[in-house]
Amino acid sequence: MTTPDPDRLRALLSEVDFPCDRAELIRQATAHGADDSTLGHLGAIPDTTYPDLDAVTGACSEIT
Image 1 (cartoon, rainbow, N blue to C red):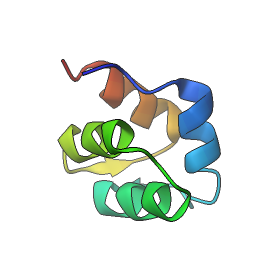
Image 2 (image 1 turned 45 degrees about the horizontal axis):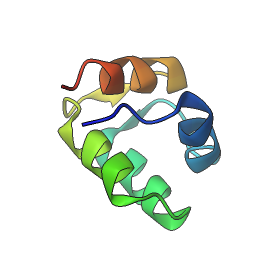
Image 3 (image 1 turned 180 degrees about the horizontal axis):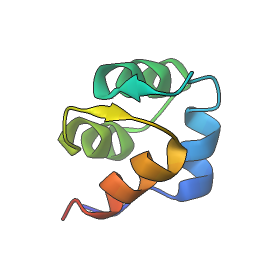
Image 4 (image 1 turned 90 degrees about the vertical axis):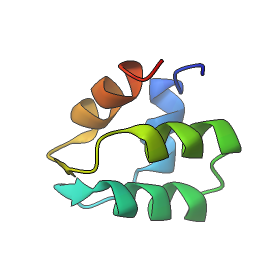
Protein backbone atom coordinates (compact mmCIF):
# COMPACT_ATOMS: atom_id res chain seq x y z
CA MET A 1 0.00 0.00 0.00
CA THR A 2 1.46 3.38 -1.00
CA THR A 3 1.60 5.96 1.78
CA PRO A 4 -0.76 8.87 1.14
CA ASP A 5 0.88 12.14 0.12
CA PRO A 6 1.14 14.37 3.23
CA ASP A 7 -0.08 17.42 1.28
CA ARG A 8 -3.11 15.46 0.06
CA LEU A 9 -3.85 14.30 3.63
CA ARG A 10 -3.56 17.88 4.84
CA ALA A 11 -6.13 18.99 2.25
CA LEU A 12 -8.49 16.10 3.00
CA LEU A 13 -8.29 16.62 6.74
CA SER A 14 -8.23 20.43 6.75
CA GLU A 15 -11.47 20.69 8.73
CA VAL A 16 -10.63 18.10 11.39
CA ASP A 17 -10.67 19.40 14.95
CA PHE A 18 -7.77 17.69 16.66
CA PRO A 19 -7.53 15.71 18.80
CA CYS A 20 -9.77 13.20 17.07
CA ASP A 21 -10.15 9.48 16.52
CA ARG A 22 -9.73 7.30 13.46
CA ALA A 23 -13.47 7.26 12.71
CA GLU A 24 -13.55 11.06 12.48
CA LEU A 25 -10.50 11.07 10.21
CA ILE A 26 -12.25 8.64 7.87
CA ARG A 27 -15.50 10.67 7.96
CA GLN A 28 -13.69 13.89 7.08
CA ALA A 29 -11.55 12.29 4.37
CA THR A 30 -14.64 10.69 2.81
CA ALA A 31 -16.50 14.02 2.87
CA HIS A 32 -13.59 15.65 1.06
CA GLY A 33 -13.38 13.03 -1.70
CA ALA A 34 -10.56 10.76 -0.54
CA ASP A 35 -9.70 7.89 -2.86
CA ASP A 36 -9.90 4.24 -1.83
CA SER A 37 -6.17 3.97 -1.15
CA THR A 38 -6.20 6.89 1.28
CA LEU A 39 -9.32 5.58 3.02
CA GLY A 40 -7.67 2.16 3.25
CA HIS A 41 -4.64 3.69 4.93
CA LEU A 42 -6.75 5.63 7.39
CA GLY A 43 -8.77 2.51 8.12
CA ALA A 44 -5.57 0.57 8.84
CA ILE A 45 -4.03 2.99 11.36
CA PRO A 46 -4.48 2.17 15.05
CA ASP A 47 -7.86 3.05 16.52
CA THR A 48 -6.69 5.72 18.93
CA THR A 49 -6.91 9.47 19.45
CA TYR A 50 -4.59 11.53 17.26
CA PRO A 51 -3.38 14.85 18.67
CA ASP A 52 -2.51 16.43 15.31
CA LEU A 53 -1.96 15.84 11.60
CA ASP A 54 1.70 14.90 12.13
CA ALA A 55 0.58 11.96 14.26
CA VAL A 56 -1.80 10.85 11.49
CA THR A 57 0.84 11.05 8.75
CA GLY A 58 3.28 9.20 11.00
CA ALA A 59 0.77 6.43 11.62
CA CYS A 60 0.05 6.18 7.88
CA SER A 61 3.74 5.88 7.08
CA GLU A 62 4.01 2.87 9.39
CA ILE A 63 1.40 0.90 7.42
CA THR A 64 2.97 -1.53 4.97
